[in-house]
Image (tube, rainbow, N blue to C red; front, side, top):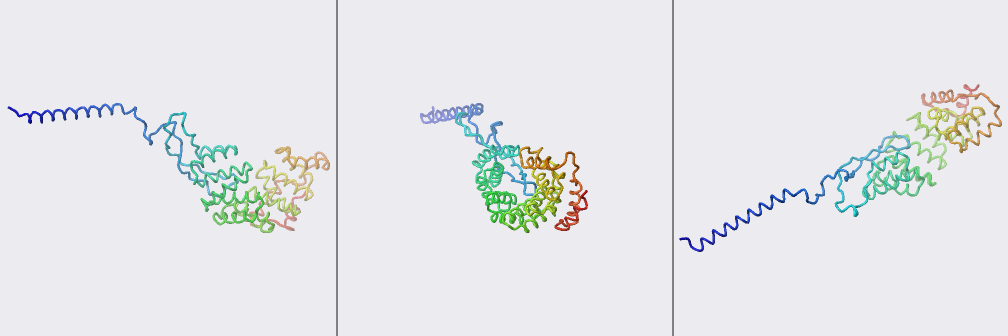
Length: 347
């Protein structure tokens, strides 16, 4: 006959086994119902996920004034798990803001890059693109603030310094602009843009000869840099050296016949050199592109002086090719040399 103690121990063991069985049953049931549990922070939510992460930054190679920029590498982010009414504002990606910038919607791009920076405050490329958007939109104070911030975060980014120098020139501070443009040239000696902006800063600071030399350096790197050609020609026009201006401007408009600024300057150089019919043709071409610009008034004035149907005294092709040939042999025509060069194509 078993004692009471033995019976009680057996009963306790049975109860423990029953408890363990109930616990196991609850665990299995919880596993079956796990799909109703709240999502974990790292779970993929498909369309709810927005690209975040560090971008690779703008292209630092020499390029046009448009300033190409690379896009960021997208990685999965973490959405807000609150109900939709309380969801945080949508995260703006670098790609999205850059796409708007490339469409020329600079004001909207400013807003998007501002939102991007709110989530990525220490990103040099975000400050750079916000500054560039503001520069394109004409907000020079905002442009200076963010381009300066981009330079502080990425001091070896040549294009950041080039565009900061542009803003400083526009705000009447060529001395400061020269510092950043010279630094950009040192960082990237192959940057035509750095040399061009440094030349412009020198011209604004009164160093005319130094500006011409720096434009020559830019054209030695790229003989088809339209803005260096245009700016160099304009410098000569300002000094009344129209024969010197004709060559670079002729090549500029041959390379880009849609550049109204270069066409207008070309017309001024031709008129100053005594080619009124050719000048009229250049002004008319510029006026077709920008009907309400200076070229239209110049064309109207010359129309009263040039006989109807007059043949242009010189052709752009002849002038451009003559100047290109001089560039290819490593000399930019100046003074008497330029006069002799262009007298050869006079009719």
